[in-house]
Length: 635
Image (tube, rainbow, N blue to C red; front, side, top):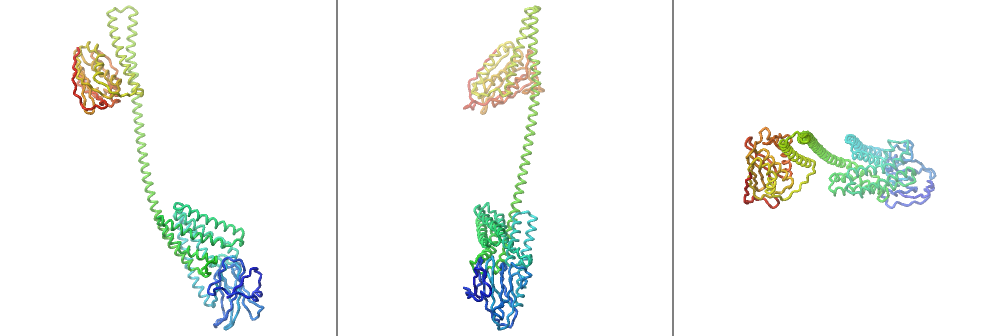
């Protein structure tokens, strides 16, 4: 076979026949000139050494646009001319076949010259096979069976993956379905099956398929790779390179749709080669990052991508032409890809299922925790509301109690004072009667003053206005100075007072403890009868100081003992009709607890009552201290 390049594209068969032609550099290799827009002429000298007369010449490269077949006749000026290629309807071709095929006859021992004129915008590859007619159709049948098995397998996988995509609604599976369709379409386009079965009478569609097939494969396999490998999370640079290559290929395809046949298909092949390399690098990179599904993905793409790379390089004219026309490697690689991608998707679905199950368990735990948290919040809010209700109820009771106390214990003395002043003004009262009345008024005003003092202190404590200022205080001194205040009442009742007090230093608020001491000693004096006794004691323990005030008074009835430190406590009169408000003990309890202590009592009706309270040691003190007891009797 000899070769001639017609750069003008205007040479006729007669002109070419008259021109000298060059032999091909390698007669064992199919002609491959890559993307070359010139017209190429090929000359074949044939001698029939067999008994067969009917022959076929096949060029198994379907994308060729136009192939003119010229067969020499007995006359040098007459040639048999036939045309084939993907620019012509299938019905107008010499043979109804997916590739350019020409039938011709040559007698035994006869010598003929054949010229082939090739003009195409695709890769210029002209692999030529001359067949005996019967052998050609037998071989075509076997090839059809093999190809049918390939396309059947691809169709089954497409339908299967489509069903899975419909069930799972997962983008990765959807991308894989379109990738399979695009890959199958690439093989079908280069084998000529699209033209043969889909649009045999509309050759213009071939240009559309030629423009779309490569970019569609690059587009969907890019989306599949990014989604399957989670490439964005592993390496943004690789992800951006893959996306950039995809967008450039799509832009190239759009420009080719606008400027049909003016932009070379060559650019597509560069983008495809770059895409294949980037996919393999991405899968290997993710595998090195211990992403296990990447192993199957890498294995799945090695064969088809290497086959696609070799095919593309062959179409570019960088490797011998027969590699691109041998589709077995591309088909075998595609089937391997389907197999390993299935394994990869299975591995990925297993991981996704495990992750979903784990997420569901986490979600259930989170919902349970939120439920428990909500229940706790509801319980706390309920308790808070109940506490506030109780507090409101208590405040309401305090209000009622205060109104009752104020109306009774303040109004009474004021009314008595007004009555006494009215009597004194009228002159109807004798000096002896006025003296007795004045004594009664003084007694009432004294206890009213005590009541108002306690009421103000208690109200101030309730409103948070009472400042707690702890300091080192001497309980013995406070008790002694408080007893001095009550000497008149003690002397009137001829009460015997006994001290048994060491030097006791506590950490407490001085004003609070003075008020508490006054209230407790007031009660002892109030409820102790004529010639009774009061005993004041104090002692130090390891953790606290304990103080007691005991009297030999009337005692507290059992029915009243549970309410002694509340607003509901029963107010009783003293041994000389002294009145109380019920606030004193409540104030004592709140003061002693404010200072970190406690208060309690022991009482027996008719025999007396002992009140105890404790306070913390002053800083640096704690162990019991034995000191000299001070004992004093007062009459």
